Amino acid sequence: GAVVSQHPSWVICKSGTSVKIECRSLDFQATTMFWYRQFPKQSLMLMATSNEGSKATYEQGVEKDKFLINHASLTLSTLTVTSAHPEDSSFYICSAARLEDLFFGPGTRLTVL
Amino acid sequence: AQTVTQSQPEMSVQEAETVTLSCTYDTSENNYYLFWYKQPPSRQMILVIRQEAYKQQNATENRFSVNFQKAAKSFSLKISDSQLGDTAMYFCAFMKGSSNTGKLIFGQGTTLQVKP
Image (cartoon, rainbow over all chains, first blue to last red; front, top):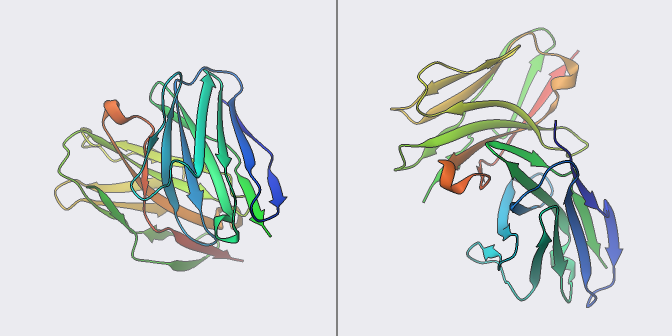
């Protein structure tokens, strides 16, 4: 099956700094990728839809200036958490669509001190 | 707006027995897909089963099967011959038809513990 990778798998940063998370489709091209956030023992909440070559579409309540998404190529989308605070600590998961199938990345655990 | 509800936060089952996880959803769409995903402790999301709304026949994948009741907007997952490796969090998810491919709405999740 298709593979989606995320880097890093775990990152710890200080409050006020910015963190970039990468999502790559390794063996297929993805014009659309999705970013989810998952707090411990909770469900996945869709944050935004990342569209190659255009602006991301954010879900209601998600601050677009805080969670910057860039989809510069057909195999890479990045999520940058700007001026991170402890409440941004969470598990971030991306997914990519290929035809009618969806493939999830392994997730990135962000801890903000 | 679409909603997905899983009313069982936690469930347990003895190894080799059968367990059913419940899921209901609400939508005004006629063309959509429903999924069950498994999230083990590694947190990697794994597709368990998928159902197209236009198909009346319930989807099956080996030990996993669904009971899709479109009129009742119900989509339960049955796991037969439960195995220790089935221990995980299970999410029911909804996706609109092809124009929104990939955009999933998840239920709250059910944590399943398979006991030896």
